[in-house]
Length: 258
Image 1 (cartoon, rainbow, N blue to C red):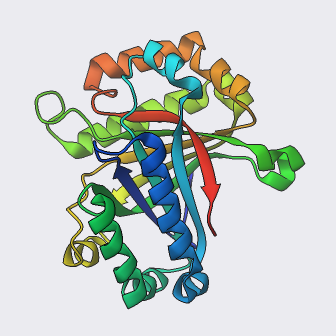
Image 2: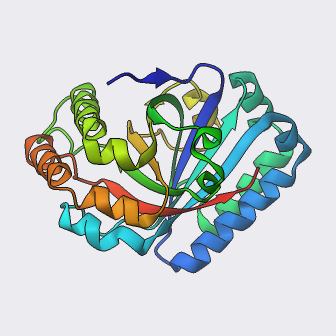
């Protein structure tokens, strides 16, 4: 299965866990407000290509449980795209940005419960919006975040990520995927911004693989999740290398901030 590697932009992902003292609604409101404040800054308008806030939607939860995944841990995923690494550093080092992050830390422990990293981006399926038509603006998003079960099952992170990659190739090759997926994008952790983040109080990010799949509507997404071959591949991966262990997988609501 051919895949393309993103080379002309710089992507940063943040996975932010909800604190136990906040409801899902309260947490998402606080994250949304923070994103609005960040997006309004001149340094953000200058340097961002896009900023999306991605929240859990329960629409496919029951189908995920049938595939062996537990209930998704409440979290928000922020995806920021810059033209270059230099655009990121100019934004991140701005005093106004750091003040917003400090306020968010005080309000709901934003940084301490976060895993933030720059990512290598690989696209396995990519149907352009112009090619697909105007209805593509209403695409639905499914998110999977995989970090592996630890040394008891998969002693080597590289081995786990290789197993995930092989499994994703199997998924993408299926007729049901070719029929229904409009995009299949994989984001793999790299260490490019790690020193900058840790210097500002972020914990070291765990190596993870983030998968984002767009479909036209949830009926098509459910068709994929209920496919017998999808279930077979998933069961094999769950039993073979702990694909599902500590994974966070959910249908998503996407709020575009920039």
